[in-house]
Length: 241
Image 1 (cartoon, rainbow, N blue to C red):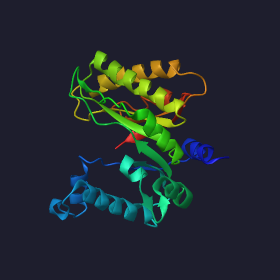
Image 2 (cartoon, rainbow, N blue to C red):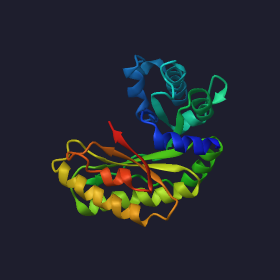
Image 3 (cartoon, rainbow, N blue to C red):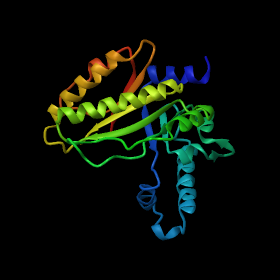
Image 4 (cartoon, rainbow, N blue to C red):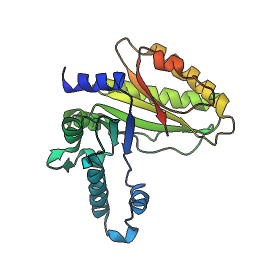
């Protein structure tokens, strides 16, 4: 099997964690602060990104960070474009650690409308996907947020996620679809029923041979997403922590 097939098989058969190492420029200062590095430690965005990459490199090179327990790591674009111990990050993750490299591709969230936050436009997605594929990235991750059980809003979230997923699949990558249900959603169970119905409808419409992954908030109802887990178009369902 080639690398992509091995990574696909790992996702299909192995349990484990997905490490979120995808803080973007906006969330990086908080991540560094939590790591013990105050905001007066850098004087430019470039220096800030150097610090966050050093932090990520220490995490990834730790003996505890390995493919026995960790399925994959979600990377920010800047991390994908850097090296760890002389190897491109995605290559190091897979060849040294047997951890599948995933790329965050969304550009953040729109303002709330109809009880949801859609993803901002991604006009440069196609060239980014080409670079990701060339660098050995297996799949992508993109996040929307559902704050209310609004049927029109939830359909819009799922439609947008699957439309972008088709673009990602066409580039030879496997998308992680992440329609997060806010745990503070006042009608969370109803929102999750609407979400599941919308996801199932879009899964049924996927062409044969195409697969996605789903990253979902733990639902109020046990086994709500069992049909999603069993669906032939779903490689894996992972829990959103």
